[in-house]
Length: 150
Image (cartoon, rainbow, N blue to C red):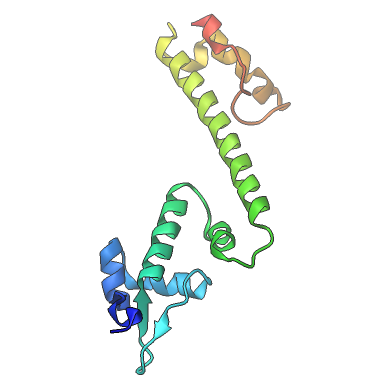
């Protein structure tokens, strides 16, 4: 028996069920160039074990916050911009991590603040002053010292 005869094969429905999502997801990923399943004589998709590993890689990278376009670059052996895509993703993760840190500090400050209404808190007002004046938008930058007014 040839080794490829023993290889596991799945239909689109079987593979989708294995990963817990609808078949249209696999079809969409195929349209996006992320998957290239073989076809049987009737033209139906046939997924191999390699395809299953590729689906697992797509799911893993999506859970890491990557876009399908970034993932396509990672699973394309001919893509020249793989390292650039990974650097861009790291930059985005750093930006999001900084936002989370600011959000954490604001939330901790609000939790510890003696003012019941956070908008009346002197520390909070001090850090929001430039937003009110129109010189800055959004949350305070990392390194803000909201805690000193708690």
